[in-house]
Image 1 (cartoon, one colour):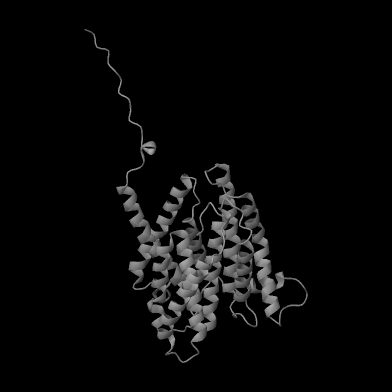
Image 2 (cartoon, one colour):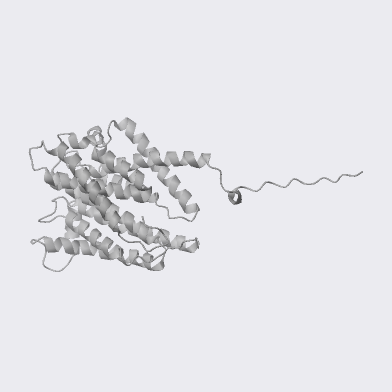
Length: 348
């Protein structure tokens, strides 16, 4: 993240860092997926995009170091070595959902920034529209409407939450108040980004409806959704992403989710942007999307694997930070003043 004294911008160093990380992930992943019968390049591209997205999300919530830990954890996750039905197109759609969440995390940072990020907002708008358009069902996109709908829900709800929190933070008059223009721009993207995604999908899909109504594909996709059920939480489904064992991972994920709420509340009480609540909100959205899976569904669970990695890495980092905070004495002006003892009258 850029320094708050300067206007945020995409520096050459950030682009070089993402390029080097992508090259390292590419080399590591190709050794794990080259033995498959189907073409492994779509799967490789999807994994690289997912790892970069996880790095950016954890970097925004914690810092650069924990972002690298999360990226390495997902790169060498055992799921890529399993001979499961990891079709490249389906995994790529899931990776676009993670790219959407990474873009929303950057949008959170821009919304809370004290300077207007006029150079960065067009980039975020284009990335969000592109991710939604490519994840949406079409000639070039997946046949399943759920990734596109999930990307749209993440964009709309994530930006709305950022706008509401930034408005409340401005009323507290903190030392670095969010720029009003950033808040207005984020609110504008709530409408423009999904509409842009549907326009991108119509441009790429020659079979799209020509009546000019962008809501027709949205209504058709909602009708194709399966009925909500709890079949996605069976043992076979949980084993697909709760590595190494559900009874070990699920309690840790619940504890990590509580730590995100707790850390975000601490940031909020200090009149700081509650970046930890980004993981809280994303966890609720991803778990809610699991209710629209069926037992026969063999599509990948990349978003849940990535969510488990993000929460577990956050848990370790937050526990270490809490330990260091307990060992560090606050400055004298923040300590509780000692109570004055009443002076007794002494008579001679």
